[in-house]
Length: 432
Image (cartoon, rainbow, N blue to C red; front, top):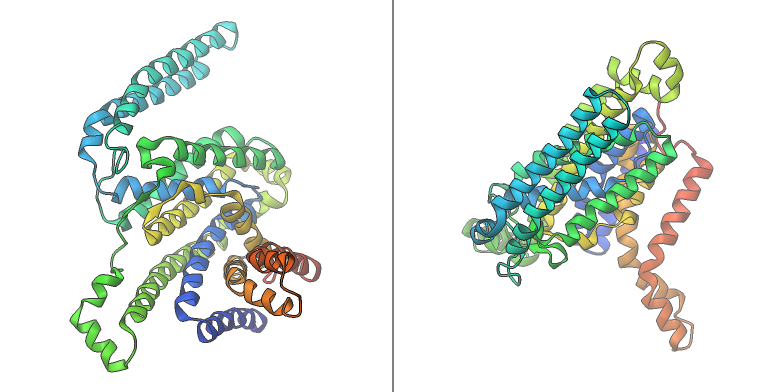
């Protein structure tokens, strides 16, 4: 316990030094991203640390959480919805009915050529009808003021309501993926989840009617009770408080907003930790670890391994979806082009591995440490490289080294991962 507390104190010292030596705005920005990454790492730890499921589709579930914020809290676009919204909704219902009917045919009919032919007829006919209804409706929506809108808009509800919806969207996608892919071997499951995540992001980039695609959607409302800096700077109580302290109101308003985000994200993280710890130390948690360690023995004891895997896969994905929604709410925009496997999948995996898979506190420590390193190197790198190359003559090589210093984050991440795997193979805080 003393060692673990020392590790967390060391990470806290890193954030304090960042605020003292550079700026508190930067330190709090990094802290907020680390808290969001910690929630994602908790979701991955549920899947891998509890059940041994190798999910490399974290990016896709985070993107679905961000999409939920658009659908729930984005301003409404009445003209876009009137142009083709009902047609899109009808097409989606037809597609879902076609898939449901195909599943019913598969379950009810006797195996054979007749069942195969019937299933193909249902799926092909449903797909043709779906495209017949969907294509003109989507084109009509995207043609409605494409420079400023071109989408169906959202429900204009509070942003906080979008967070559980993001969890529900991610959970629904996880259920569909799990029903198909959880019977695969671990390496095949990793390939399948990575591919499906790329499909989700590709759909978000190319289907403008959802969230304007690569044109991005900005102006999303902030979650309650976080205010805008401009509004805070016009509040008499805040101005009196700032003048009493003798500090800059612009900088202070930014710090206050970031602190409010940190408190809000910290509360969500604390709730996830509390629920995870109770689940891990319950009979359900012991059963999941038994399945992880020896599936054959657990199945021989009467446990439905595939069903339990599906349960934990859905739970972990829902937690990742919440984190994705929180991130989009904080940024105030949805930019599908920023979702990439390096940042939203493999970096989260490094956090879990470095912290210690199977241990919730280890995942949080890994998220704080690796998140700080990942973001601070981009800021500190050019200065460090400038000091290293101070004795070099001015020229193309020196300019190239200084300009590419922000890419030192990949080298730093690799070195940290190698050191931890060499000296603490089970992570900084191993599973008990």
